[in-house]
Length: 101
Image 1 (tube, helix red, strand yellow):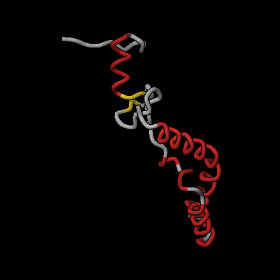
Image 2 (cartoon, rainbow, N blue to C red):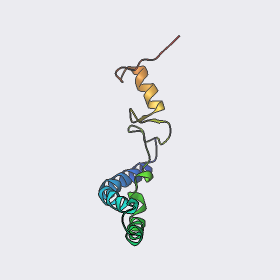
Image 3 (tube, rainbow, N blue to C red):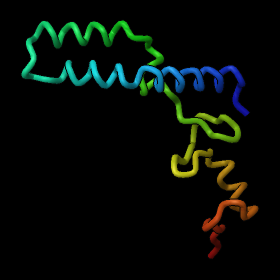
Image 4 (tube, rainbow, N blue to C red):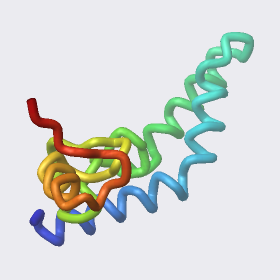
């Protein structure tokens, strides 16, 4: 089980990303638009730099929904490889069976 503080920190980051997503998109669009003057694009980039660091989507870590484990996660299921194996062995995940040959 991951530390509760690291899980909470990641949840705070998710909330910030959700809150600032429209602002990021708008500023990014302005900064990438070649038809706009250079000064305007540069000002947009400066505004992007002023936004909180944790509001950028790359700062969010994919974690297991059950244990909070940060590594070895399957995005399709949203859980770590260890929990996937355990739940699949118990038959808790529909359509997944343990193979043997």
